[in-house]
Length: 153
Picture (tube, rainbow, N blue to C red):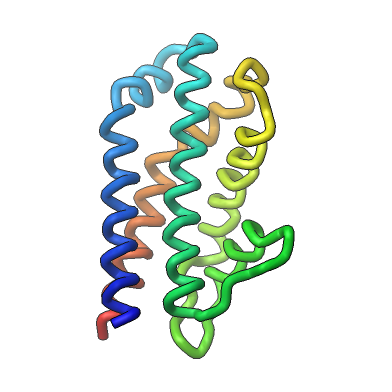
């Protein structure tokens, strides 16, 4: 029952991330062609923040429902990401070290977002994360869908 519930929650979270991209598709397309103004930069920052929140929500569910082991230190965000790269008695590794390194950049931005003012967001520091966003999500989505199928077996 825990596995079924976890799979449903992961699918729901993926649907929310998909909606995030759909609702900001015009903006994300525009910033690939034209440097954004400060309001657009703030909006893109929100997308980057929300994207990683969605990823982390999936990881939290896996840690709680499948691993029965949720990091408790003050560095739990980083530890949770690392935990997903490691196989344990209940599951295979969820993501590769390579994908973890990419996601770690979004985690870092999420931290910056939470402790900054919007006027501090700089496009030159966000541009690469933004331009690679859909590729990173496609890679993540692919491994998560495989992970869900493995859990069902």
